[in-house]
Amino acid sequence: MSGEQPPSNHPSGPAQPARAALPGYPAASPLDAATGAQALALRGLTKRFGEKIAVDAIDLDVPAGSFFGLVGPNGAGKTTTLSMVTGLLRPDGGRAFVAGVDVWADPVTAKTRMGVLPDGLRLFERLSGAELLSYLGRLRGIPAEVVRERAASLLDVLDLAEAGNKLVADYSTGMRKKITLAAALLHSPPLLLLDEPLEAVDPISARAIRGVLTRYCESGGTVIFSSHVMALVEELCTHVAVMAAGRIVASGELAVVRGSAKSLDDAFFHLIGGRERETEGLAWLRSSQA
Image 1 (cartoon, rainbow, N blue to C red):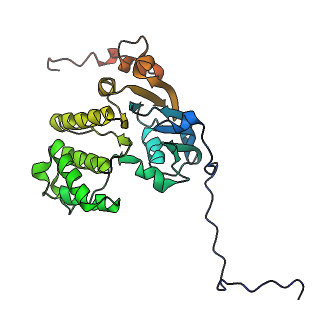
Image 2 (cartoon, rainbow, N blue to C red; image 1 turned 60 degrees about the vertical axis):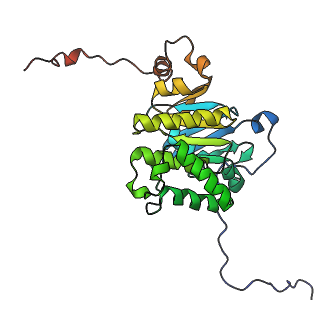
């Protein structure tokens, strides 16, 4: 009969609410060649927490094969930015591309192209280091034999071979950083994102981690890491971006960002608008007794 609707094939019941769309975050669309060629490209990436803008519509290009430092004072937005890039924190606007793949439009593919070492990552405490790598490798679909070979190589290079059967719960801070780095490298991603990878790490562990990261870049990989230690960034990085108050205030090759300053530390101080503090009021500080 005219006007009748065909019977529904779905069971009756309350309609399910549609998933909320991400505000200001467009669907995937073709990229220009320059953007697609970058290891990481950010376009208008934004994050707010209430009234506070933590990341303010930033644009950033990270060239493939670079050792890229992301620096800034506490609260600048570094960790928030990396969290949005890795899929741990949903942006309020803008886009993030890893090797040309939109992180939030195609998160599964994007995450196969990155290895992540976030700050304060929780680990499976009741597994040994070798068991942890085996478990994570199988989760990624890597054949068991390949996982065993790669895990053995990573444990050896990171000086964890003797601790391979030790529970992660008994690992020191340096050992935890190294096993997490091993997990990030296990699937041989083209991009590594590291949040303060050398914080609270002893000199021997730090040396091992620096060696692995340098070798990784020399083999064609790209490293992005955040740090507060300007001397470390100046030693390791080919490129750097300086963040302050949620914005990128300078970005490019390290020598260009440093400019005519004596050191990256001096350039950083100038770029973020730092000012020297007067110390005359501390004249009472001296070695003699009061």
